[in-house]
Image 1 (cartoon, rainbow, N blue to C red):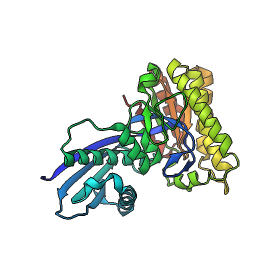
Image 2: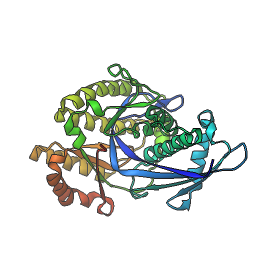
Image 3: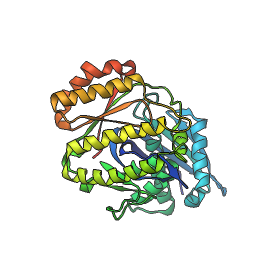
Image 4: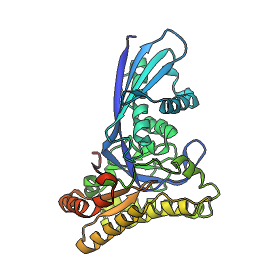
Length: 338
């Protein structure tokens, strides 16, 4: 086998029903549903050569530079899950990765970066085995989940569901399933304008945040609500009810941060400008009847969601009223991946 290279890109995603709290090996305590984005993605390439030995070696570069912290994360992932990656033995790997969005923009990149890595590794497996079959996306979702929980959803376009849900027979805690075939056309036009309130590293990581759900006094109620909202949202996505979508999206975002505020110890990731932007979005919606809404990830930045039909009006609203509350007037405009 001669040396070869493989490449893949994978996007970030933004959850509407939030995953917060896990157990076992990256298994979710409640199901989640997310939009898959298109412009905020990670591009990864792996250059492969045989080394004549029984083990593999790996070197990792992020945007052309050594990244010991991320290399250590990848190495741990491969060691912890070595039963799936025996095909790497005897190979030297050079992994090069870059983001299409600023690394300091406050956008969580683990879903994009780890799913892009997994897609590349599966392409390496195909090359080693001489396979020309299409990639097994369920396997890609499964292995991505082991690397970063929300990465399980990034391998599918439009929208994905991760977590066992009674009304979706194929659903599982082990991997995500695509929802593109059951989503009303209006949701396939959605924009996500990401308003960067802060580009600083979070004071409490998502890993720690998930762990603080263990023993949380409101945890079981939260998980039950998320399961109910998952079933509700599945129906909303089918029938195109934008008012109900707004209700679920905003409620889920605020519940996520309520869990943080009532953890032991309590903490907050929203900032004053986060709340200012939320208030302005709600006022804009009341005054114009344009179906904009917000959601939040585990941080201070605001995701402004809206259908393509209202792009011009919403862009004017962002420029006139919201950018002043953003770090360096920064807003990243993304759209749902088709």
